[in-house]
Length: 128
Image (cartoon, rainbow, N blue to C red; front, side, top):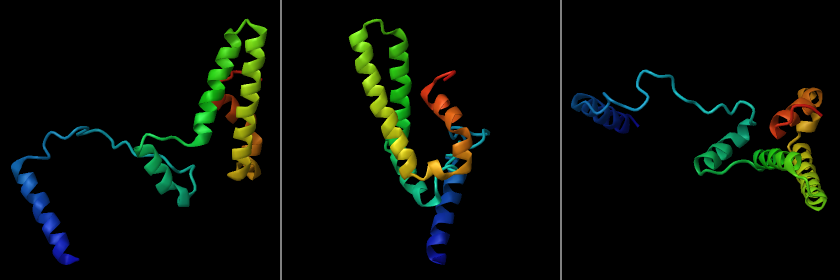
Protein backbone atom coordinates (compact mmCIF):
# COMPACT_ATOMS: atom_id res chain seq x y z
CA UNK A 1 0.00 0.00 0.00
CA UNK A 2 2.90 2.37 0.71
CA UNK A 3 4.03 1.97 -2.89
CA UNK A 4 0.64 3.07 -4.31
CA UNK A 5 0.42 5.86 -1.77
CA UNK A 6 3.82 7.22 -2.82
CA UNK A 7 2.92 7.05 -6.52
CA UNK A 8 -0.32 8.96 -5.88
CA UNK A 9 1.47 11.58 -3.77
CA UNK A 10 4.14 12.02 -6.47
CA UNK A 11 1.47 12.52 -9.15
CA UNK A 12 -0.34 15.09 -7.00
CA UNK A 13 2.89 16.95 -6.26
CA UNK A 14 3.77 17.02 -10.00
CA UNK A 15 0.32 18.38 -10.86
CA UNK A 16 0.68 21.07 -8.18
CA UNK A 17 4.04 22.12 -9.62
CA UNK A 18 2.50 22.38 -13.10
CA UNK A 19 -0.25 24.59 -11.63
CA UNK A 20 -3.12 22.28 -12.47
CA UNK A 21 -4.89 23.02 -9.18
CA UNK A 22 -4.74 26.83 -9.34
CA UNK A 23 -8.10 27.64 -10.96
CA UNK A 24 -10.35 24.82 -9.86
CA UNK A 25 -14.11 25.33 -9.92
CA UNK A 26 -15.39 26.42 -6.51
CA UNK A 27 -11.99 27.56 -5.27
CA UNK A 28 -12.35 29.38 -1.96
CA UNK A 29 -15.97 28.28 -1.50
CA UNK A 30 -17.34 25.68 0.90
CA UNK A 31 -17.77 22.18 -0.49
CA UNK A 32 -21.29 21.18 -1.44
CA UNK A 33 -21.67 17.95 0.48
CA UNK A 34 -24.70 15.69 0.20
CA UNK A 35 -26.71 15.77 3.41
CA UNK A 36 -27.85 12.20 3.75
CA UNK A 37 -28.18 12.28 7.51
CA UNK A 38 -31.91 11.55 7.19
CA UNK A 39 -31.20 8.37 5.20
CA UNK A 40 -30.31 5.17 7.09
CA UNK A 41 -26.60 4.43 6.81
CA UNK A 42 -27.12 1.17 4.90
CA UNK A 43 -29.11 3.03 2.19
CA UNK A 44 -26.80 6.03 1.71
CA UNK A 45 -24.57 4.48 -0.96
CA UNK A 46 -27.64 3.47 -2.96
CA UNK A 47 -29.22 6.92 -2.64
CA UNK A 48 -25.96 8.58 -3.72
CA UNK A 49 -25.73 6.31 -6.78
CA UNK A 50 -29.34 7.08 -7.69
CA UNK A 51 -28.71 10.81 -7.31
CA UNK A 52 -25.57 10.67 -9.43
CA UNK A 53 -27.52 8.78 -12.11
CA UNK A 54 -30.20 11.48 -12.12
CA UNK A 55 -32.78 9.28 -10.41
CA UNK A 56 -34.82 10.26 -7.37
CA UNK A 57 -36.45 8.09 -4.70
CA UNK A 58 -40.05 7.11 -5.39
CA UNK A 59 -41.38 8.99 -2.36
CA UNK A 60 -39.84 12.23 -3.65
CA UNK A 61 -41.39 11.73 -7.09
CA UNK A 62 -44.74 10.90 -5.50
CA UNK A 63 -44.56 14.07 -3.41
CA UNK A 64 -43.85 16.11 -6.54
CA UNK A 65 -46.72 14.43 -8.37
CA UNK A 66 -49.07 15.15 -5.46
CA UNK A 67 -48.06 18.81 -5.40
CA UNK A 68 -48.63 19.02 -9.16
CA UNK A 69 -52.03 17.37 -8.89
CA UNK A 70 -53.03 19.77 -6.09
CA UNK A 71 -52.12 22.67 -8.37
CA UNK A 72 -54.14 21.20 -11.24
CA UNK A 73 -57.11 20.64 -8.93
CA UNK A 74 -56.99 24.26 -7.78
CA UNK A 75 -57.20 25.44 -11.39
CA UNK A 76 -59.63 22.79 -12.68
CA UNK A 77 -63.20 23.85 -13.48
CA UNK A 78 -64.46 20.72 -15.25
CA UNK A 79 -66.17 18.29 -12.83
CA UNK A 80 -65.26 15.19 -14.87
CA UNK A 81 -61.61 16.18 -15.01
CA UNK A 82 -61.72 17.15 -11.34
CA UNK A 83 -63.03 13.69 -10.43
CA UNK A 84 -60.28 12.04 -12.47
CA UNK A 85 -57.60 14.20 -10.81
CA UNK A 86 -59.01 13.41 -7.34
CA UNK A 87 -58.82 9.67 -8.06
CA UNK A 88 -55.23 9.97 -9.26
CA UNK A 89 -54.39 12.08 -6.20
CA UNK A 90 -55.87 9.44 -3.89
CA UNK A 91 -53.83 6.70 -5.53
CA UNK A 92 -50.61 8.71 -5.17
CA UNK A 93 -51.35 9.56 -1.54
CA UNK A 94 -52.06 5.92 -0.72
CA UNK A 95 -48.81 4.85 -2.40
CA UNK A 96 -46.87 7.47 -0.47
CA UNK A 97 -48.53 6.38 2.77
CA UNK A 98 -47.68 2.77 1.97
CA UNK A 99 -44.05 3.69 1.30
CA UNK A 100 -43.89 5.62 4.56
CA UNK A 101 -45.11 2.54 6.42
CA UNK A 102 -42.72 0.19 4.65
CA UNK A 103 -39.79 2.50 5.38
CA UNK A 104 -40.73 2.52 9.05
CA UNK A 105 -41.38 6.26 9.17
CA UNK A 106 -44.86 5.88 10.56
CA UNK A 107 -43.42 4.34 13.73
CA UNK A 108 -41.04 7.21 14.43
CA UNK A 109 -42.22 9.57 17.15
CA UNK A 110 -41.03 12.62 15.21
CA UNK A 111 -42.88 11.50 12.09
CA UNK A 112 -46.09 10.91 14.03
CA UNK A 113 -45.83 14.34 15.61
CA UNK A 114 -45.01 16.22 12.39
CA UNK A 115 -46.72 14.03 9.78
CA UNK A 116 -49.21 16.70 8.67
CA UNK A 117 -46.55 19.40 8.47
CA UNK A 118 -44.23 17.11 6.51
CA UNK A 119 -47.03 16.14 4.11
CA UNK A 120 -48.03 19.79 3.63
CA UNK A 121 -44.43 20.75 2.93
CA UNK A 122 -43.87 17.91 0.47
CA UNK A 123 -47.18 18.42 -1.29
CA UNK A 124 -46.87 22.18 -1.40
CA UNK A 125 -50.07 22.80 0.55
CA UNK A 126 -50.35 25.72 2.91
CA UNK A 127 -53.23 24.40 4.96
CA UNK A 128 -55.36 21.32 5.41
